Image (cartoon, rainbow, N blue to C red; front, top):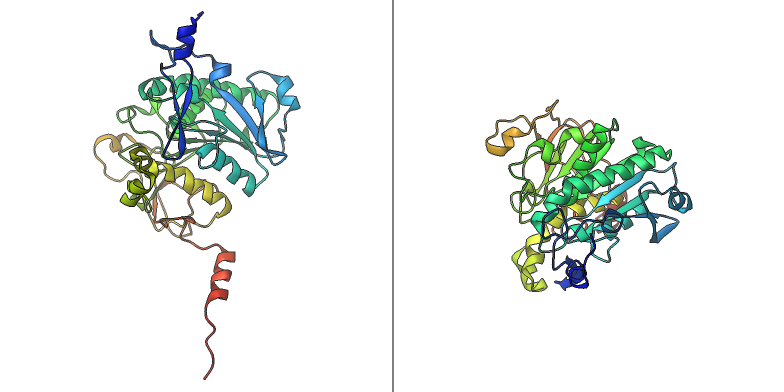
Length: 362
């Protein structure tokens, strides 16, 4: 399709700054509708590779482009994490944005290959409905990228997809497509998967346990922007998994002076908790659990599992290093400010002991 100059202007994505954070905006949506701007996958879905050798400037990778892959910093001996941002976000992003924060946390924690997926042209404001409709197509394109890596001798067992909000649902579509091709992802992590327009969807149209060998989900804004019911093999519910998360109190509205920051605060806690878990692996200690086959009503009853028993006979931690044999729903509480995880790491316990006043003998 050849677009006129006026049509091209409508398809331009702009950055709006609200509440100190950037939001992506487009005058017209992208998608398959009659009035949509056409999707041009190599431009609208981009892949940026970061490693400890290039932590600030990513290598741009393309599906089926071996030349760029060979010239990149990809290390086949290190694990690879692919991160998918949510609605109205972007990648690589800047300070305070989920893509950059996740990338920085991963590289600080270990020698990862980190691929940030920028699909911001397909998730721009105010076109949420179109963004949801674009999800399966984006997921299929990401699956093509994963298959390209595997065919280029990158081990499938080293690949981990992480998605926030809409990105979590898209990660599920990528997993479904790879399943069709005989490739099973080892792990998908859903960070507060999107709820609006997914509430009545079946497992084939949203993230589900069948999308990877292990699917773990963190719920922080259940019933508002985030999906409230179990979606994975293990589902974590910090502070009940609902708004308002600690620290997202009414004073946040006055401080930020923009309603969207206030509304999105609990939603964003999912990726903030996960990012912190990379450098504080024992910070998010769970307090109790429930089996996912407990009596439920409504949409919750549609969630099924192959095994549903949970146990608290050992310590269970939420985050990057969670036990992949876990099954069930796990609950914990967090601090209102960083560090969010209440459980102290060994070095933190030692520091606390050193700060205690010394009792003198009488």
